[in-house]
Length: 200
Figure (cartoon, rainbow, N blue to C red):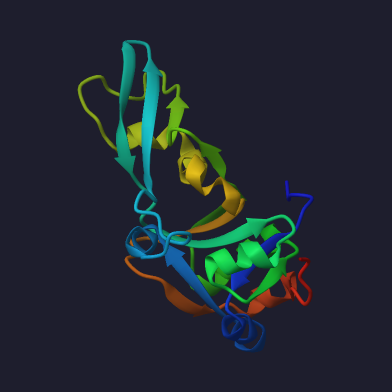
């Protein structure tokens, strides 16, 4: 279900103009944000989550890295103000009115296998609890252990980022992605409007 408050993509004016003119949209990746040197945008723990799995034979736990084959777009959930925008180093934005239509249009534009989106949850510990039943072997730790919590593991962030109110879009690709890439996502424009006025 789409949220009842605005989904706002913060950006530099030149990039917002390029999106509405040519469909140019930059999509990041977990590896990109791992390396990005910015206190608000960068996060060296992207893609890494602590999983606690309750199984018939006891509790298993460990840190898992996954999602490195996802293209990502981070947005702000709610009414934006100039103070918040300045913290990110941006001077413009656009509103995504239809997250499903937008996600589908981008998926088709970049050839993504599938997509998901949702509001990030902020927790003291970046951990997810799963109940795998007999799916997970007590003798091995594999990607299947992390798979039991589906996409939920991609939307957990530490409390220190809670002011960002992030709404995240993800598009799955067949192989890992190292950097951010710019795509022609012209079909997605119709699901967005420029944010002409800011409060504050």
